[in-house]
Length: 237
Image 1 (cartoon, rainbow, N blue to C red):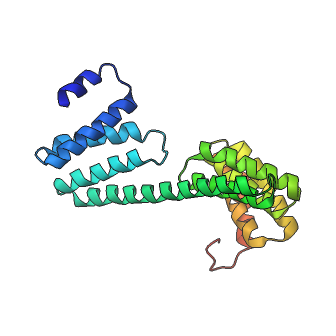
Image 2 (image 1 turned 120 degrees about the vertical axis):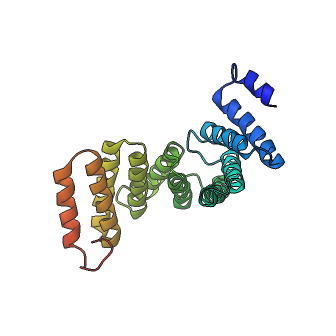
Image 3 (image 1 turned 90 degrees about the horizontal axis):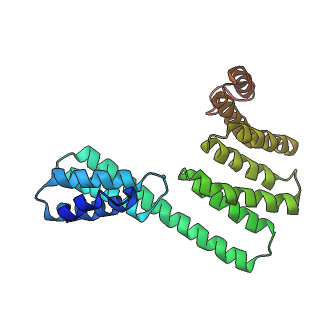
C-alpha cells in the first residue's frame, strides 16, 4: 500500500490522495505498530478532505482516525478534541440529511408557494449556515424570500426573518454590502411590527457588518443606540 501511494502521488489529485491516505492511516492504526506514521497519513487525509468545510462522513472518519492515533500516542487532550469534532460533524450531517428529506416531502405534498414551504427552505438555509456552508445555504434562503414576498407581501414578519438569515449568509460569504442591505430591510419590517427583542439582535448584526466594512463611526453609533434601549444587566447591553 505504501509503495502504491508513492506512485499515486505523481499523478492523482489531492482528494484522491486524501482517500488513499485515509485508507492507509486506518490500516496502520489497526496494526498499531507505527502510530507516528499513522498520524502522518491521518493528517494528510484530513487536510485533503476538509478543504471546502462541508460536513461529510469522510471528514468525520479522518477526525476519528486522528483521535484514535493521538490516543495511541498518549496525547489525550488532542485525541478528545478530534473525537468531539467528529461527533459534532456526524450529528450535523444527520440533521442536514433529515431536513433535506423533510423539504423533499413538503415539495411534493404542499402547494407550490405556500408559507410552510418557504419556512422549510429557510430552516434548511439556516442549518447550512450553522455549519458555515454559506454557498449551499444561499439558494434556499433566496427561495424562502421569494415565496414569502409573493404570498405574504414585502412587509411580513416571515420576510423579515428570511432577510435576517440572508444577512448572516452574505456575511459568511464576505459580501458585507449585500448583508447590510438585507439587514436594513429586515430592521425596517421589524420596526413596523414593533418586535423590539428581534430588532435588537438585528441591530447588533448590523454593527458587526459595519465593522467588517470599516464603517467604525456608524458601528459606534449603532451600538450606542442599542445600549440606550437595554437594561443595565441585560446580555444585549
